[in-house]
Structure formats: structure tokens, C-alpha cells
Length: 400
Image 1 (cartoon, helix red, strand yellow):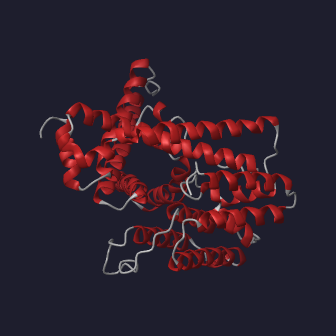
Image 2 (cartoon, rainbow, N blue to C red; image 1 turned 45 degrees about the vertical axis):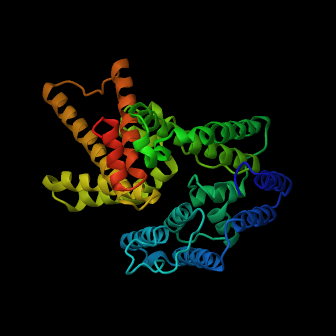
Image 3 (cartoon, rainbow, N blue to C red; image 1 turned 30 degrees about the horizontal axis):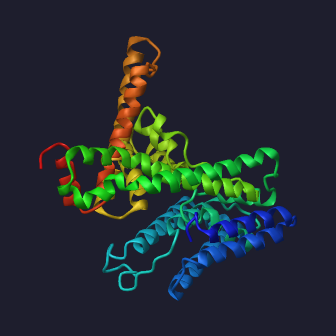
């Protein structure tokens, strides 16, 4: 069911009416769950898909209930194990050929719509549950399969979702800005992005030998902007729809192309994913490094954390060698930015002056353009085989 289909518009209209007319929380939650199940059912065609999803949701809920009832057994090691198991399950499910000998989905692949976002919601749910929390199975199911955000996020946090379920955002004149946002989202995604996506490098790569170098450059430079319009358009639609229903959903983008460097870019792009990675991977690992590793070796450990974190972000999107290379490159540059900043601070301290990053118009636009270009060009690794990507790079510089 596409977001521009009549069926989606119909269930969205029904959801908005039901959430606004059904005052009791129980009634609102039941209606939302039924509509979410109907939306999900349009993507589930096999019993094994339903069984796997039901089993996963049951396991996640029971883990949360167990933690709420008795958190004494829950340690940092337990949290790390849960995150690692969920990540591993996601990778094995998304790529049945990954570790084929031990992959339970190798012989019998199962495709589940929105599984990346469902797994991340599962991680935040289990890790955010506190001792004594009363967990409603109805709220939990709505959180996990909330139909506006099922396909592509944003990744909401459980307690935030629970709070907005209990106290819906009131429908005021200003709330109709959400309707304007929905319409803008439709224009970004379905009018601009969908109609111009063929300009992107991904659609050109299989035909790179037949294209001129200038056309390839147009594809390479336009892909990131088109992906942004596609993704931010989707987020505008679902955040706006959710607001009309009374749900406050987290923002996912904050003007990423205004970023002066790669660190700013990843802080502004897909922010709901970034916050989960920051809270449950990067920060705990960094803290462990500063506590347990001698100072003279911390630099190497932090560099590894940057690379590992960005590899996880990249391979969350795809488990190919190309995504691995993309993640390594992003992590390496992020670490280089930190090293450059530390050296600048050290030089400033030695000179007795206060460190301040350059804020000239030239440095600002140089940073923005170079950041956009770097992300755009490294995204070539995403699609096609390794030889395809290498050939595209060669064509871009005139070596082929």
C-alpha cells in the first residue's frame, strides 16, 4: 500500500476521525491497532512472515515485562547482548546469504516490511523499560507497528510514544499546519523525487558504459538531493498525519545540506536513527574506552568506534561490501575531523589564544559543498557490484 494510494488516504482519514472522536484511550488504541494491522496485512502474503513477526513481537514484549518486573539481573553486559542479538538477527534476516552456513534464513528466506525500523523500536523499548513500569500490550503493539511510521520511520522512542498516546496533541487551528506539511510531503516525494529519481547515479550504474561523463556527474551529484526529497517527503507525510491523529512523532531531518562538515551532516540526517546509535552504541563504547583503556591507546580505540558505528549505520541499510566500504569511509573522516579539531585546540592553547572554528562565508560554503560532494560520491558504493562502482569512479575521472 503506497502512501499516495486511495487505500492509505482512506485509512488515514479513518484514523484521524477515530482518534479525535474516541475520547477514551482504550478506544483510540484499539482503532489505531486495527488500522495498523490492516495496513501491515497488505504487505504480508505468507504465513511464515506472520509467524516470524508474531514470535519476534512476543519475545520483545516478554523481555520488557521481565525487565520491568525484576531488573536486578539486567546489567550493561545484558544490554549489550540484547543489542548485539537484535542487530545480528536483523542482518541475517535482511541478507539470507550472509553467513549462509549458520544463517537460519538461508534455506528459507523471509521478507518482512519495515523490519529495520521494527528491530530498532524493539531495541529502544527493551533498553528504556524501567523497573516498575506498567506495560500495556496494546500500547506496545501500536508502538511497534504504528502504520504511519511502519515503512520508513522515523524511529520513535517508547516512552515518548506512550506519553503522546496518553495525552494526545490537541487539535487546534495551528494543528492544520500538519495538513500543509502532508501536502508538501506529497510534492517532495511523489511529484519531484519519484519523477526525477532516474537522474540518480543508482539508475545509471548498470548503463554506465553507454553514458557520457557529464551525465554520470549529474547523476552522482543529484542522487543525494533526490534521496533527501524522497525520504524527507515521506517523513513530512507521516509526521503530519500522526500530528492530525494526535501523535507527536520525532523529527528526522534538520537542514542536512547546511552542514559545515560530515559530523554536522550525520547529526542532521536521519536523526532518529542517529540518536539510537548514539545512545546505545557510540556513547557506551566511548565511555568504556575512557574508563578501561590507557590514555595513550584511547585514540586508536575511539577511531575504531567511529568506524564501527558508521559501518553499523551503513549496513543497517544494506549488507553488501559497498555499504561496508561506505561506512568505513564515513567513520574514518569523522575521526579525522575530531583529530583535526583537537590539534587546532592544542595549537590555540599553546599560543595562549581561545580556539574558535572559522566562521567566514568562504569556509562555511566550502564546508557545505565539500560535505555534500563527499557523501554523494561515496554513495556510489551503495549500488551494483564492486566492479560496477569502480568502473563508475573511473568513468567519472575519465579513466575508462
